[in-house]
Image 1: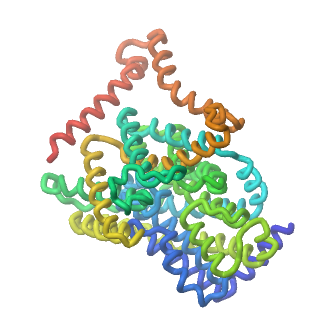
Image 2: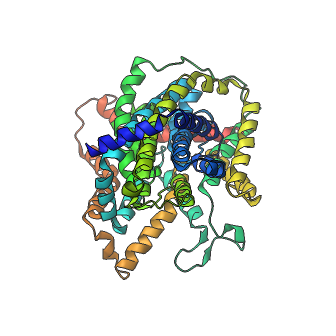
Image 3: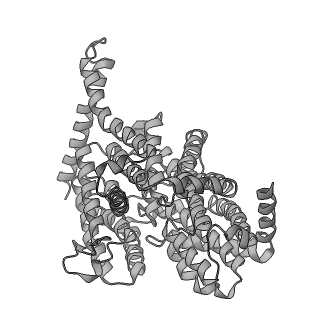
Length: 529
């Protein structure tokens, strides 16, 4: 009842005319900037921070909340339409969302992203209000061994299910982990893979890597085949979700929410891991697994819900512990500090009205996001009808702008070109790009948790099994690694109960079919210039 009455007081503050106007402005600005490749909510909040100094703290943070959710949705728009994530958490959405767009189902992909964001954001914000103390207590109880095991699980689970060749998937992951090593060793201070370049000492920014691999790599690939491939406008298709789309989306929305919020609330969490795990889960549970990789709506609905639920979960450790788990939360923490407010265990008691107004504004911003962007889905989809030379020229322009604006360094433009060429070569030789981006994101975090675990155990590897949750996760990892071999052994020893060419024959030839399909794709790539 105390939480309920505090939340009602928060709504009373957030729904005053001026504060409501700031919420609307925040949502519109967040969405508008989020649809620019490479420009995410963190950068938007950072750019607007000086502008809000004249506002009183409550109004400023209500605007920030709108920018946060608006930027999250804007990032999914570029992922779906242009295969260009604005944030690392939008990377997974690009896999199926862009395939749907190319198949003339961009409006459905954008609609399921908007509705999934609303459902997950609303549930996540409610959980933030009700369960914050419980979730924070659980999150604090997890140590470095558990975090390390969870991140290893995310790496293996995603890499194992992508593409038709696991070898290519793990090769891509190895490239990503190598790129993640660039920079300064956090313990010894020694520079690694910097080649004497001081600007590489801080490592490669994930936004630059993601924009280069996805946007620039895709633009170069399209340009390489533009002369041989006839120009055609991608059809927009029906503007709204059909009955089948709703039926296939609502369960992924709920499952994505269940993944997103707990991971967002973990001090070492964030939105990347739950979006990856949501995608893997939907692929396993889907009644249409053959559509994955070709434009499955579940592959958009689940990860987008996980993304927005994690956005609400991220505010839990930021408000209750003063511990930001992503860039946007870090900027908001800086904003709190600039107003002389220190997030932490005492925040809810010392700044109760401001905190509850912020939480209430998350509900408001989420609703505004739905009513503003859902009618715009067909309009956004019509961007795909632009001729490809103009469309990809625009993508390259905004990709360059986004990469440069991260650090305002011309050196980042060189990195953008080099990594874009790498993205092009990966497409040329059939390597999936997602494991590379996953390796860049999680590699440094995994190294940090591994170092911390071994320091706590004085170098004893048994310290990796020092927590029950870690042991449970390693059992799951072992099952994932052993399952393909066990399945092949079972299938080989199973007696043939159907005639050749029947169901048993089809089951036996699955691997050969996948291999030949992949070989056909690879050969097609070789024939193209």
